[in-house]
Amino acid sequence: MPTVLISARRAAAGYDSRQMTYVRQDYRLQYFADSQWVDTPARMFAPLMVTHLAAAGAFQAVYTGASAAADLRLDTEIVVLKQDFLTTPSRVRFVLRAHLIDGVSRRVIAARDIEATVASASEDPYGGVVAANGAVGKVLSQLSEFCAEGIEAWQKRSSTP
Image 1 (cartoon, rainbow, N blue to C red):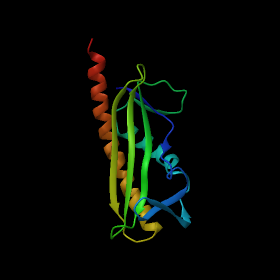
Image 2 (tube, helix red, strand yellow; image 1 turned 180 degrees about the vertical axis):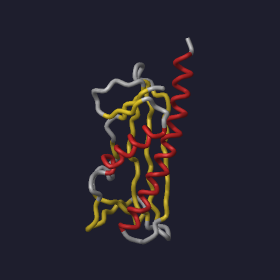
Image 3 (cartoon, rainbow, N blue to C red; image 1 turned 120 degrees about the vertical axis):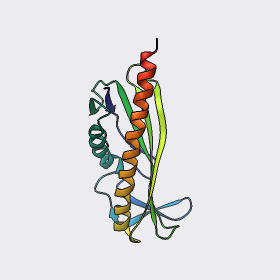
């Protein structure tokens, strides 16, 4: 089983702060005035990703930090994390861009945008947080599948002369 290094997580512009985003109009991000995340979404997602991928059993070890050597590297970026009030009920949309990279050759083995949308139980920030937790869970499951498929492709590529 390979080891994986989860590199520093990023978030796209507009999603790289503690502010909770929502939309009421296409192409216009807004922020809740009295509600915010306890940390940036990328930082909060990191330990969940490590724990989930380690528990999935596809890797011998899951590391974070730039100094660790690993067979594979997983780069991720939060592309979208917003509560969308353009629908009723509102929905939280979470999109994660993932790249699985060979640790030696630095070649991209697999790349995918992973997405989940979950309806909010209430039309407020708390409902958005609960829906976001559901979306994160779905994305983590899809990320595990993505990594398993990537490992299989990497092993096939590594075994061919």
